[in-house]
Image (cartoon, rainbow, N blue to C red):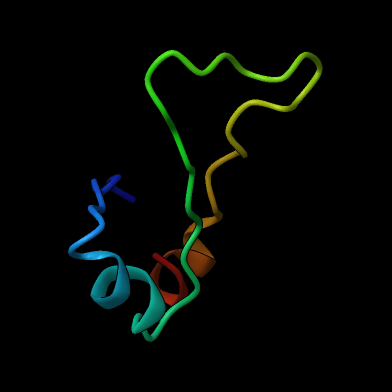
Length: 53
């Protein structure tokens, strides 16, 4: 499943109006990951690939 850059201008259409669940990773330059927080989740199984974005 490819990643997509979502902007403030496209957020409503890409996320809020999506017909499928969307996993959003909020990121900011200079932000460091919280100690002990898990890194990105594992890929979705192929059986769910067409049901989420």
